[in-house]
Amino acid sequence: MTLTKRILGSLLALTVVVLGALYWLGTRDDTSTGPAAAPSDPQQRIERGRYLALAGNCVACHTARGGPAYAGGTPIPTPFGTLYGPNITPDDKTGIGAWSADDFWQALHNGKSRDGTLLYPAFPYTEYTRVSRADADALFAYLRTVTPVSQANRPPELDFPYDQRILLAAWRALYFKPGALEPDAGQSEQWNRGRYLVEGVGHCAACHAPRNSLGATRPADGLTGGVIPGLEWYAPPLTNDPRAGLGRWSAQDIADLLQTGIAAHSSASGPMAEVVLGSTQHLTGEDALAMGVYLKSLPDTPASTAASAAPVSAAAMELGGKIYRQQCVQCHQAAGEGSAGAWPALAGNPTVTAPSPVNAIRIVLDGGFAPATAANPRPHGMPPFGQMLNDNDIAMLVSYIRNSWGNAAGGVTSLEVKRARAAATRN
Image (cartoon, rainbow, N blue to C red; front, side):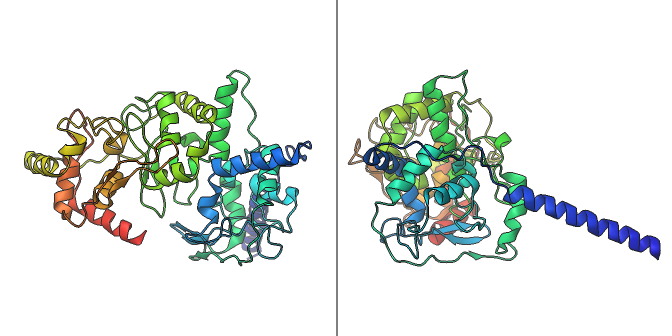
């Protein structure tokens, strides 16, 4: 009995030590890169912060549809429940009016609120930790100038046990280490600027990196793409995979898409169209090209998502081709070459050849609408066919375009179309 008690006591002590270590690792701060930025011209700092707010697309999560700017309330769906973007206007009681620049830096860099509360990683501090102190201070200075709005934050609606915030300490111990992004002396200034925008301010990994069952991304997985949790759109790889990624793109092609919403190989749609509209169209040409240069330096790592394995019968290809000639050929042309500057090519289009067919399905269902940008204020759109075509028709049509003109991306089933239709209704 005494031996049993000793064993149990040892196991209990070990458990306490392990939990204590996890809590310490998950709540530790990085203070080595956090001194306040050197003073600069106040108006220049504010303007710099305004630009950073656009580059980081802060409005997307902090402005509810039809609501005041930055007042919060935007639902952020996740597999674990729904969170809501907080109020970041300078209201003293419900916003960040009582915060200091140090408090704001702690949120971005260490993922903690003003009172030390651990923040849920739906706020991408896993990427924002790489933002420099000078840029954090500029962003804070800009947010101090927006109109204060008294609007209480809506609490998260998460399933158990994900609603137990203390468990974030263990998650952070496993998947988050605060730290700045040091320049690579072996690379050009342009490359380093692009990496900073992609990995930090632009937080591209939030959508374009695969996530595990606990919602975490891992640096080793890179920007190899994945389905965006809660939205059910596929974010393609940003690697140089020639089939599903950016292997056929130039750095300028990438810059064109970021600034205009259209490029030689594809056009922005779904969530990416919203990113272009609210964020990347406002990038300077130098910054957009820097992002392209950095992304073109990434290896040709294959997409993390398994390719569709559905076979395509000759009958499906014949019927899909018939629907294509009836509904699509006028814009996308007989060989899928599209019309330059108007309707994108389907041959070699990564939206079409992606491992997951969900984006192509949803565009056929709900239409394809590139964002209206300053450089392309009147983009051509594609009407929805969800009411005209049934699930089987759409499955055959998408199978046809995914396997024609040199495309070889696998077939689509009517069940996949049904699921995409349901997801579109939810969102």
